[in-house]
Image 1: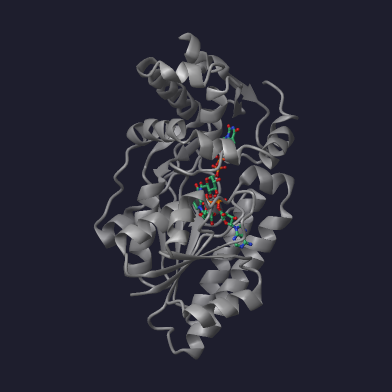
Image 2: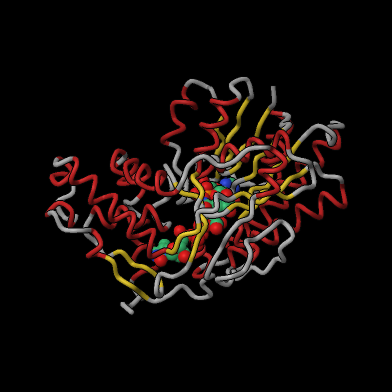
Length: 370
Ligand code: NAD
Ligand code: DAU
């Protein structure tokens, strides 16, 4: 039985990880810590909080006194650190919060965990999993081999630079203080509970509402997509069975252009409307409600500055060491994700009310059709 701290547990991957962990390791004690930024939502965790299957604390990883109190009280033996500012476009318009949380916040959390585990003589048995991203490696050319754990760090956005800094801090804590930490660098996730400012949910919701589907640049940029359930099971594997001090790349070898991803979303929505006539009543502004294609909404707009062209992850170290692969193929997982958003309209209506509207105006108001 472990006492586990999951930071950022009210975010997209965090919520999925809490549910996966609860199901796989029911005897562990889980505490979720989340600052409840705009990106957080605890709706899916409420039943677990209500029946005390998990503890929930609203707080900032950068709050050293709070971190110390939590470690003293819960004597965590595992930390899965997911709390972060995670959206590249927001890091371009307002980078400061990324440095505060991703760099300084990670430092405070690391230092608290180190001090606590040292004092309790737990450095040999405790584990700190730092959840990071493939964006630290920068951008690949069309023919370049996929990123491995020894690819050089070349971050291009303030978000990627802040995650790279946090990776370096973790590495330095391992080398200098013997911190029992591991790092995962994962490719783009998709699936339930992803915030509608990210590509896939944004396009699904815009299509349902009959709004333009804003593809940055010419849409030839490539991301390597991994279903969030595969990421979560990889994280649970690495924290328990990985070698401390090691980095593991995680990714499903699903390289797809943005153009292709958006077209697939359109086709999945068109097919769902054809199969279920009630959808036309629920979403009358969607082109599929009038038997047209959502593809008619696709619009190419001003590119993201410093837009990385291609990410691809070589996860062969993970597959070799753990004898596991990733289960969900993109062409299966994407229509399932579209269906999830069709089935969870109250969830995304809630998330897209209020401050979300201001963000859409800020990020898309200035973009012109290209
Ligand atoms: P998210 O933005 O959906 O969730 C992040 C959560 O962290 C939110 O609930 C937010 O409230 C919380 N948070 C932010 N600042 C905090 C602070 N100072 N203290 C405590 N909590 C704070 O992000 P996500 O997509 O779930 O990503 C989770 C982690 O995985 C991040 O570290 C991200 O860099 C990494 N990652 C994400 C992806 C992806 O495709 N989404 C891929 C690879 C790695
Ligand atoms: O690679 C892992 C990273 O993936 C994570 O570390 C980040 O936290 C996560 O946000 C994600 O970053 P991306 O920048 O790749 O994700 P995003 O969903 O913002 O964009 C995916 C691609 O789609 C990217 O090439 C930009 C493009 N895009 C995005 C939006 C929001 C568009 O063309 N139009 C859009 O409106």
